[in-house]
Length: 374
Image (tube, rainbow, N blue to C red; front, side):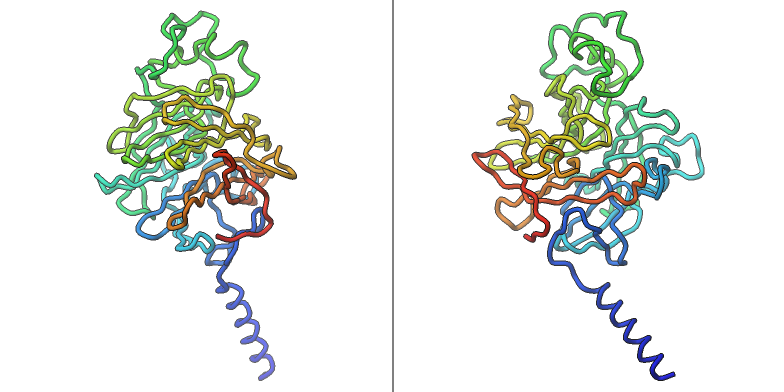
């Protein structure tokens, strides 16, 4: 009996040590456990730094193909050091009781991002929203708000951005009547259009109802201005859209970039006064070659810099897709590429690829590392 008790307490102590042992390095592609010993469930997300704490928001997945739809909501984790994360629960829950809700259980809710508005003292979440059982037709942006970074967030509304507004760099072809051959139907990606997007005038087609918004990100500039970056015009073109002062809507001031280049997973960050973008090609769940670009002003002109990844599997972005670029607080010139390895057959098993970004001749470079630390 005594030996059994000794064995029990020894086993309990070993489990306690394993669970309590803090992480001190990143291991890209491996299981990343939270404070409860469970794999982090925070896919396609973004990170907010507020009052000395990092907040990581992302899609809460389930096992099996049903996990590709929103069955739970948006997860939130907190960390003081970026290595060790505490599960804070569900920051935004899907609506389980009202099937008519825009965020009804079973909708598609992707790439949630949260920013803090210092004027209103509100935490604002944006995400790509597709209505339940409508595929990727809706192409909307959803907005939620909270007084606390961990939530609960209150869902406000969804819309297509910038309805009734032309971009600052609108072309003459966009101001002409939409050709009768351009139907009000959405094919949703690379290779589906009969001609270049400008010749089809997809921008003009969606002028009144608002522009399509799929993969998206948020960026707050040094002056407090916030921007939404999203794939639009059947994913053929990126829009950079300035938000309202309260971050709850679009200002109507936006810029088209990389028309006809079909970019997804766009991330935007700033270094030494220059704006950088890392994005992917448009190949669905399959990994592809990443792209990077730079501009002196956020509304262009943007210059592509090529694939930022270097080395083995760099042509597949190390089997990942960009979701966010994090500037580490308190460390000079320290940026982290954060990407997801998507597993649509079993999305809960998706892995996270965090790698340091270095700069060579002012161009971002990402090298693979099995293990690394700050």
